Image (cartoon, rainbow, N blue to C red; front, side, top):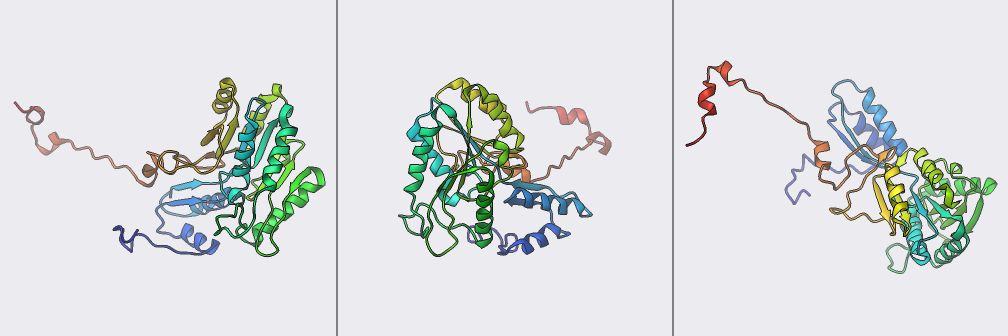
Length: 305
């Protein structure tokens, strides 16, 4: 970016962890802050900015989500299995857009879960630099420990349907499939290759929509159905930043699929969208009373002949 012409004293890279972020967000000369990460960290930044004296500093945030996919009985099973495995497990589930909770219509749930589990078994865990690798390690030991703790907790009251195997070294965490007895059993975003599944009856689509809305998140949503009225009902009822119909939920293309969410998942205009740059700017309006300066308003109003 420096070679492209951005002055070195305008753009700087400061690698680091929370200590760097805390110092930046508390700096008295900070004019604005753009952040991508967890909802909890964004809320902490927001509190830091609010506590500062001086100008009100804008916060642009793209945060996490309990991203859901709704699958009804009309969906194409093979396509669902492929899209679910890709959305939940590729990149080790470490995309903010990754699928976290899958709502399967109970009429097709057993067969669909068998197919999804079979596809998950074929995933190859290993070095992400190799083209043969499907799932790499999670980001660090702390994240791995969090995922292990979550699965142990799920063992106590829910059904752990599938747990993959991992290499002997590294921060690898195997893909897991967990059946929940109710959607409320998942209370937070679990950032890793863990797919939670809830079954629903055809007459209860409204309740499914309500349970997704109740999470407060609105980042990504998937819908697999061949019924236009179902797709329309879901998309119109949920305030979600990015909705994916009959496809996977990851890999938004910059320039054609602006990305971002609302509620607990973001603060407004989406990255890559036509209005995103305006979030970094401020407006100024200049109004001049030419008559007060002795000008002749009638002469100014005369157009060219």
